[in-house]
Image 1: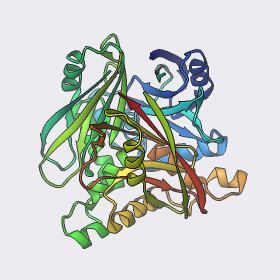
Image 2 (image 1 turned 90 degrees about the vertical axis):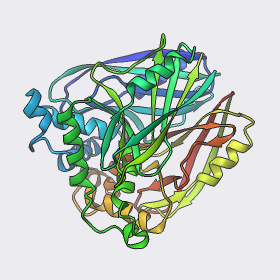
Image 3 (image 1 turned 45 degrees about the vertical axis):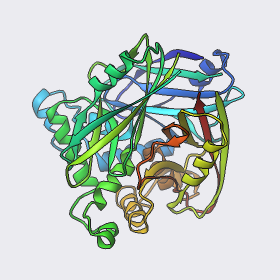
Length: 138
Length: 138
Length: 138
């Protein structure tokens, strides 16, 4: 069985980190599938998906890591060419990754206690986002 | 239903970035599966898979990010030991990741408009690559 | 068909890298599923999953990459707030990723010859870990 849903979000961009765990759990509860995998995929080239302990200190630490390793204020060929100033956003998104797959059993995600599912919007402006939630199993 | 295919590529190595979206779409169209997931996996330890807007400026920006964060011209214990000079390639591949999972619906991948699927070959020489394309669904 | 198993590990933490390929292959052999995907997921916010050529030189190179890019000895807001000193562990884990999906065919993982599946425990102390192994296919 396959059930495909979506999560629609308004983000602020600029490394906005949004906890989507409750929405994923809700779609899982409504799916009538007992065990299998939830595949999360972000349609778009300037955002990514991962897990993190959703705590304000860590959100700040995670943003600082991106600023150190893929800084906004260096030259990007993408920006020279297209002028939209979000070259750093694209590079960060490609490194973080667009998909995450989480097994579930007895209708419960196998997440750790302090582990939440997050979308990270690296774009340099607010965006409307669609996250695909595909539940497959039996 | 499960259909397993392959994409065979010749790469130049040295952070060669290859758009495999058309081949994935073609295998999906031939699979007779309407909705489910496509799992892409690169067999090999010096290449990875991700998504990116396939535009020459960004390809250059992405390569520069790798050179800054996992540079070629520092010492690697792998190279001291094995002498093949691709320690940096292995480390980059392990960080980027070997798998990507993309949901599809009505036989269409849920990619964003400017989001392509790419193989990044980090090795320090041309390589023949096999990407596993496994389509699962109903 | 869906079969869900676990791998239980004792790690040393501090970027301990553990090869779990034999355990995954063993669970696959016992599953009676011929082709499909194995989804590996680490429950917990301070460890990740990837593939690497499991060779001591590279393990050292991979650890050095983390120390350069997400160093232990800088300030983390998580540590100021919670005092557990593993802010760097969380940030590394979120960047590496918690899931990996590997297709198999004829009951064989499609790994490359020199490619092993590893858990990387970034925490700053020994931990007991549970890796979810979910096998789905036909």
